[in-house]
Length: 189
Image 1 (cartoon, rainbow, N blue to C red):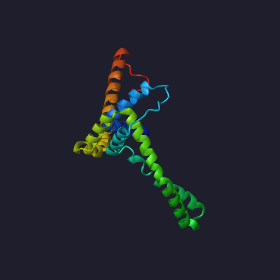
Image 2: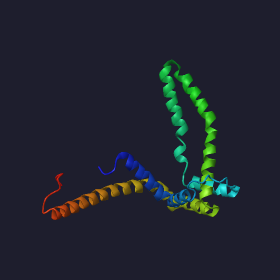
Image 3: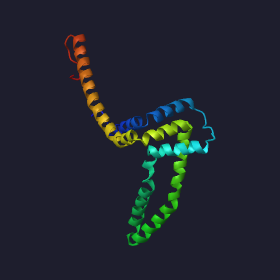
Image 4: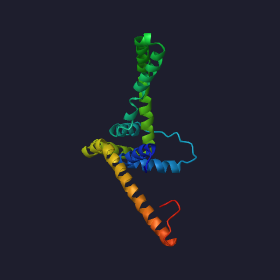
């Protein structure tokens, strides 16, 4: 196998990010290189710039992946506590649900922080363009079909890489045989 499962997931995530958000990936790389070793500056971001960032992150669904963190954590914590006191499952479930509901408003803080990140990376006009594209028919289709395209791209890259490696191995072993008066490499190739 050419790619391990974790490598496939990493490649899939990176490819999805590059396919769906190529400008963000390239801007992030440039910012990382530019700010290497420097503390982040406390920049003043205008309300309109922040609003444009919020619209862009909503359009690209940048934070949707975090929506299930609190419900999933609540489910896991319920299971842990109920395993200790199965006779109190209803009370435990209600108690954890109440605690999760109290914490739910903190989701807005993440949204604000992500908007600030985007506002630091992109101008207000760029954010408006991003939002306009991703709320257009083509942008919505890219968001919907992007994961499928990425999955198929990773599969194609896997097939391609296997063929390239096979052909390189064959060419190298043939070349070695010529260099070695017809003798094959000692590992049997």
